[in-house]
Length: 298
Image 1: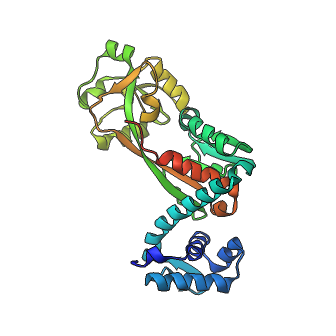
Image 2: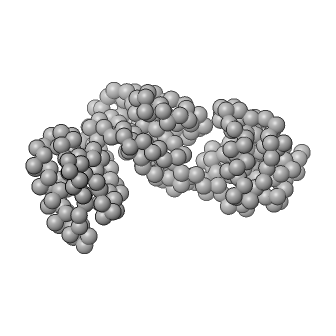
Image 3: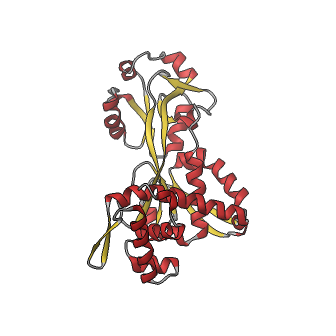
């Protein structure tokens, strides 16, 4: 792809729309072009790059490996171009309507407020509704426009973008650690009480490959509600895992085994394929991408 630096942006837009929609006819409708025009743009891009981007299987298209490699770079360019256009024209201030974001209760309460301030600054006429839930079905039922999740959805009608590999640690109050002792090794964690977030058996299973072996006896208290579970940890009932962003900013708690490698977990942004046709959803999606792409505080 040595000629990528000499691309025609219209050809990239045609490629993105076709990759997202899965067909030339749908992409043409999305861009307000004729199908033959779009087909010529895709062919021109393939010629410029010297690769085949789509396999033609009857009336359907299947993106090739070369197309997949180009897709992530093209999305980044599209995000940047869209943000530049909105900022340069001042359009962001004129965008109105409702955008519904679904995220976990902890994410909604402790992490998103800074992002919401940025949205209010750039698009003061937008209305934002936060749906605190861990259910991806919120998106599939059209109850939300954008989902923030820690797993990538596999539904073909959704667009998913990995925006951050977030970090987490174990935390407990100073009072609890003074009373129960500060564990020096992973093995010593099994002598402590833990707060469960949801199903404790899933936590036990997740931690085993990390060399942390807990049992049901370690979990005397927990809640399906992450805010409630974190509040119990803040009240000194035991040790709890938490996002580094939240845990390090919480007064009265400290990292347990601070020298231990952090727990890494992905953050995925997910939305419907109509993302590119809604200015308000596109704006919020881009602001979320920028927000989560910033380096995590150490």
